[in-house]
Length: 297
Image (cartoon, rainbow, N blue to C red; front, side, top):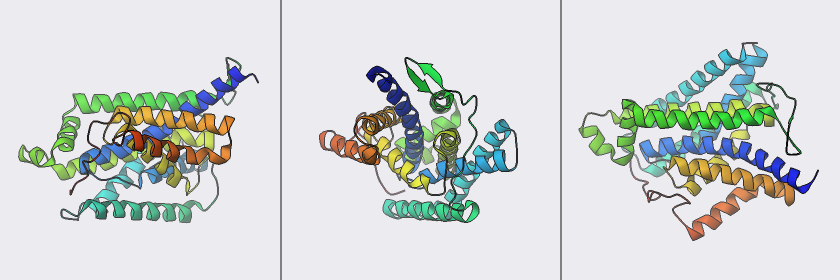
């Protein structure tokens, strides 16, 4: 394979990886904007999306579109239940306590998945043909285009939701000033519940479209959460466009680093990029000046 073909190959692989990181980062941002906390259980929503989809479509034999919809709804319910049981009962706790709760939730979700599915690695059929497509000498799996397409669909749906619906505008209001939002009649607690449900849905979608390419197991969510968190910080916490750009950047750098340097350093690249950017631009690449917006809920 020529160097040009290798570049195209690594570029598409990186964009596919980066699309997943971007969706995880969007989940981080939605909850951060609504609550001011970082949900470190976000990666487990991705893991649950993949495993539940495998169970419904492969084990139970449901048609893939139906299994897709049921999986997203089920993981949304898990996210909402987590907020109702772990976040809602607390009365104005410090942000650090809330972050520790999300870490505990991550451990609980991971342990529960291990009990239900074991330590096996599960596969999921590709959404369409598994026959690679030749692009400029590179061979690209059709699932790569599904991943990119779902990222575009998620971004478009979020843009419409936040700009064209009352619920979306209420969430935006809460992200700017929860106290003022509550004074004008917005139920902030319900907005927090909605933010967990929406972020869980995005995580589930990421897990579903990613599983056919990389398989899924009970502990894969931890690393995905770390990469998504790096993308969220690099893009500027709370900045949706920044999360997408940063996620794609991390995925591309990871792919080229694994291809031209060594795959042993693949997981370290995201952290290295994060450290370098934070030294040069602490607020992130596309910061809105809100990186220090952490506050009590």
